[in-house]
Amino acid sequence: MKLIRGLGVVAAVAALAISGCSNAAPEQGGGPNEAATNKTDTPARGGPAQNAITVAVVTHGQAGDTFWDIVKSGVDQAGKDEDVKVTYNGDGDPAKQSQLIDNAVAQKVDGLVVSMANPDGVKASVERAVQAGIPVITINSGLEQSKAFGAITHVGQSEELAGEAAGEKLREAGIKNVICVVHEAGNVGLEARCDGVRKTLGGRVRNLQVEVSNVADAQNTIKSQLLADKSVDGVLTLNPVVAKAAILAKAEAGSQAQLATFDVSADICAAIAAGDMLFAVDQQPYLQGYLPVSFLALKVRNGNDVGGGQPVYSGPGFVTKDNAAKVQQFAARGTR
Image (cartoon, rainbow, N blue to C red; front, side, top):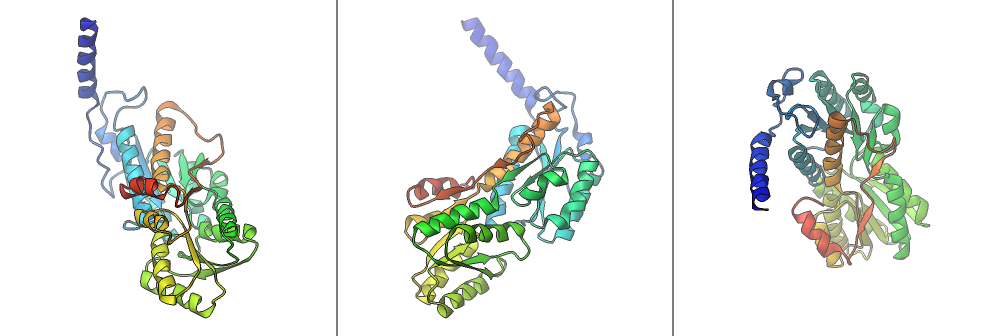
């Protein structure tokens, strides 16, 4: 037994020596298939050489956004865990997002992850990636168009079904007149959430347009609506930053409307635990970053296909007063 244990230690040390490598992402603007210069002769997990796999993630969310920072955390951790080089870029302008996708195709990445808030705006670029033989996984938005555009699967939630579930919860709370606050113009996923609420609430649902980039103005817009229509008894936001603005707007307006939101942060969990919000719909952005990078690593290394042509759902789940404190612990460290 001592001999066996000794051999096991030697083997473990040898394995660590073999597997050590850097996971730094390639610099922007590198030449085609930049990762090829970093390849070694050591096979990784039975597939291509370590550092051989590069995955580009191109979303409509930009750095500094609470939600997309969590997505990026999942991307980065999956890159480390799977020994994959990852780049992350985001732009809310579909034309600029398409350019980022085209740049990734030109660099001959091994896999591509794309969110499609404006599916028609990025369709041509996504299809060019597929035609180039690059496996594509869509995340967050664009579930309905994902398969038609050639993606192998989608990681996220059905926004309309999530909206329907939220509408049911609002109805159970006795809410009948809801403002659904849309924070990104032209985002089909956000519109689908409000449409879902409209299907199941059994009351009135009005969309209210604000800009997430101007939180102070969003707060004033929500406040004005609450002051103008005292019959509004529910406000549903679709973003945790706007949700915080809605809490302040409600207080300033002296409204009795009940609040709920899509997406989670540590602050939102605290608000739910304190009774300032009814619930949050959780689509788990960390998984939307982590899973596609892992799936693409499996696809490139082993030929594994995930999803069977169907989406992989990361939500919806619900954070309520019953579980808010527990979820808050994970949200505080950026994994929920």
